[in-house]
Length: 234
Figure (cartoon, one colour):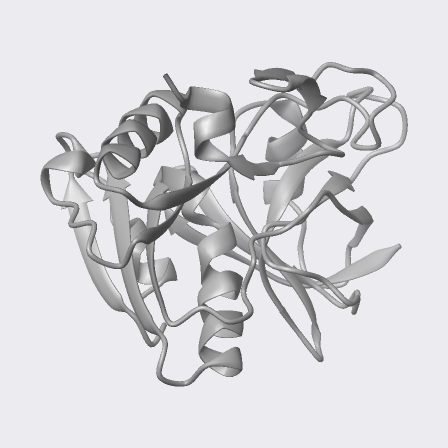
């Protein structure tokens, strides 16, 4: 059981919460969060936004009763964090990469960018953030040492360049599909992180099953990070 250190409003229904749980985590992994006893039945899968010697930080969107309860937590309250679960983005041996995040789907790229920079201080990181015209989610990423490009409304593929030849993307399915197909056409290697509904986080309920070229896979165990061509490829 972790204790809440702070819980901060970012923009509209988006928040950052930090707890005092310290784990060895990798960028792209997630936790199942629970701030209640019996109801709602299911815990909520939330990606790791940041991790340091003080604890874990999660970037979340309030969508229903579970995330409403997390939103209402105050410093000192308890939050159960099961995890870390899932695989991760490769952050070793990377010289140049383009990160493409849509709305709260960009959450894993904060910690990923920090690890990429730590592993290779000269790594070129182009970070594209897509959001609605009225949103200002870039405030949650403004202190990163990256080239940050913010797209408010419209298609983020209109702004993308593909010269890094390695692209990671996470966000709404239509955005990831469009980004993946364009990047593959440009000769890039593409990794995606699926934001599927999850019930258990450990591969038992199969609710997050997705179709890939090599058969059905569980996003919580074999993913959430997959090769883009395996999921969206022609």
